[in-house]
Structure formats: structure tokens, C-alpha cells
Length: 328
Ligand code: NAD
Image (tube, rainbow, N blue to C red; front, side, top):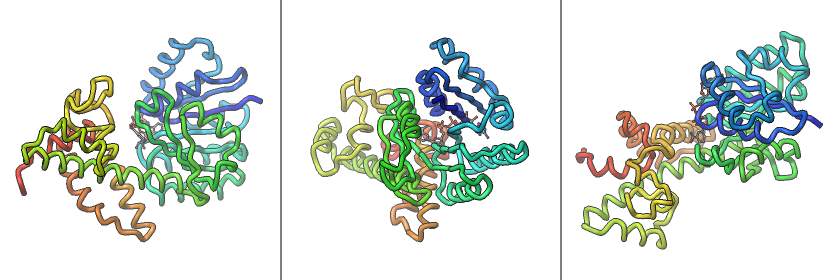
């Protein structure tokens, strides 16, 4: 059977995710893509068809969200959104739903998948809206971890609101496997996928800050930081921020491609770490949970992100920055 896909948001992450779907289309499958920046859609089409002309006819760029409803023969099987924030997801999905209604097309068949990182209350609101306005259609939070590198290599981890693996349909699994390497069923209630994503990224934001502080402390004591990095990697302070994303230039071989070795360029930028920290704090409030390290961490990420050069570099740059900071 053929499957039809829609992909909205061809940015840093989306362009790679959509490229994998394109490259892995089956004979009669179709892929419709859109970005509200026309140049992003055009360059996506050019890049993927230059690289792999074989599936060219199955790929359709759409100029507007209305065309997701009016230029297809029947409702699409899946529409994936990969846009910056909750307000964009809400805007895109409510516009699509209103086009379904205006054109008197039943959207029953469509499963909306939102892989953006957004707050849980907005995601629940959109889920309820879809269930009410397009009975039978579904809206699932499917956020990802693995960053741009994971999107490029199709090794992303997907986190879904699903009670268990058996409840993930074969079609959905096939689709996610085109873009990623792991699929986690995080729980039955809508928002469970985002809950897992935000809980993890809260831990990342806090441990990254603690690693920056700890390495600066070691430096003040006059320790050799490359040796200290080795010691931490086999000691109780071991964590992703200290080892896999170690902030000390030259601590690991060049092949590890650590942002620290290229002046903290690329990687997972501080601005996005801050964004996820804020979303975790907001969503915790909604769940009646206070995050004890939330405010103190946010204070430091806010301060760092006031500087464009820090905001747009990998989060491990906080190590270097803390070393330059004057004591308050
Ligand atoms: P990005 O800003 O590079 O891309 C977002 C794209 O969405 C842009 O091309 C933008 O033009 C498009 N867009 C915005 N509003 C739209 C609309 N109404 N209709 C159509 N297109 C629209 O962002 P990104 O880095 O690709 O991240 C996307 C989402 O994934 C964010 O929520 C982010 O937090 C999350 N995320 C990012 C990473 C990462 O490492 N970059 C990792 C995991 C999750």
C-alpha cells in the first residue's frame, strides 16, 4: 500500500529528516513539503533531487498550508511538523484543520506528528483541538533527541506518547525508522513524549552548568585539566556534558569532533539549551512540580545568552565563559 507524507518546517533539523523520508520512499509513496520561507523549500528540493533524482516525481513542494488539503487526492496519512515553538505548531495545525473543514474533506485518516520541542500545555491544547474538530484524526507528540548530527545521520531518538511499543502502529514505526535509530513509548497520556524530552534536557542544562563550574574549580586549584577530564570520565562525576561533550580543548582525540576543539562552534547551542530549560520549568509548573535547580540555572543561561556569541555556540562554551566572568 502507498503512504502519503507531509513535512512542514525544513530548517536545521527538518531538512535532514525530510531528506531521509524522500530517499526511502516506496514506489507509490508521496512526500509533500513546505516551509513558510520559500527559499528553504526551494533549496530543499534542489539539494535532495540533485543528490537522488530517482524519487523526484514523488516529491511535491507546496506553497501554502491550504495545498496540503486542496492539492492531494485524499487526506495525507502523516503530517510532520518540525517548527520552532508551540505557537507555530498551534498555528500550522489549526490552519490545516480549518482547510480540511472548509473544503469539506474528512481528515480522519491523518496522523499529525509534532517533533518540535514545545511546552506540554500547548501540545495538549492542540491534541484536544484535533480530536474535537477532526474526529478520528490524531495528533501525537514525537519530540527527538540527537541534534542536527543525529538528524543528518538518521540516528535520532523519538519519544512518543504511547503506552507501550505494541501500541505504535507498523506504519508509524516504519516512518520513524526512516529518520531515527530509537523509538521510546513514554506513556499513555498526551504529552508523555515531551515530558521525557524536557526532563532529559533539564538534566542536560543543569549538568552542563555544573561541569563548567567543576572544571573551573579544578583550574583554580592548578590541576592539569586534560588529566582531570580523564579522571572524571571514570569517576562519579561522569556524565555526557563532562565526557561526550567535554569542554576542555584537546582533552579527547580530534576524531571525537568535540565543539571545544573548534572554539565551541556548532553542536547544541546555548540558546536552545536555555529554551528547553524554560519549557521544562513552565511544564513543571503545570504539573505542580517545583524545579529546585530551575531558577538558578536559568539565571546563568539568561546571562550567557545576552551575548550573541555565547547564545549561538555549543553549550559547553559556558565553561570558558565562567572562567572570564567577574564575581558578582
Ligand atoms: P530551525 O529554526 O532551523 O527550523 C525551523 C523551520 O520551521 C524554519 O525553516 C522555519 O522557516 C520553519 N517554520 C516556522 N514557522 C513555520 C510555519 N508556520 N510554516 C512552515 N514552516 C515554518 O529550527 P530547528 O533547529 O530545525 O528546530 C526545530 C524544532 O526542533 C525546535 O522546536 C527545536 O527546539 C527542536 N529541536 C532542535 C534540535 C537542534 O539541535 N537544532 C534538537 C532537537 C529538537
